Image (cartoon, rainbow, N blue to C red; front, side, top):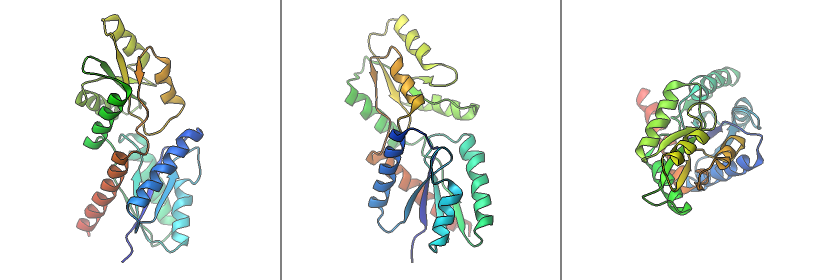
Length: 233
């Protein structure tokens, strides 16, 4: 029996750097799970969009799709945008079964990757760490990001919103921190993560990217959605 396709849905970015990272991630997911058809779609900026990706899979005869949001928090895109798009796609493609998996974060493997990135960047136990994230208008999602920061012993700073990451870094410096590192809690490069490098931090880690830890989390979310879906039948 053919397993459901995996439709990985990213936020989307006009930045080609982001697209390259996401394409690599999805290719590695497919290589890890060779029997699963794996496709990348986007909520905006970049094609294919979600309706087009679902329609293309449907035209190929695919009737069962697990949708894994390549998002680190369960904010508006995961709670509202994606479910709305999937509901419309189900109407437009009668007979298709669409199951939305959980977002990628928070997850212990991502925490491990953050710590590894910090070590690679030269951070040591005396380094003051700031979790660099893209803020949202969703208070619960921002609180979740603060919990992630606390898990790795970091402060929280946002590229957009409050607390502003540059101000957080400057505040740590004013209080005597000799070395400050920003742990980039973003999946791919882009204009907003670029703001981390404009702060006075000594170290700015690379985005999480297409690392094995991220690949494993994507597949874990896929598998969990399948189990949940089967239990509901």
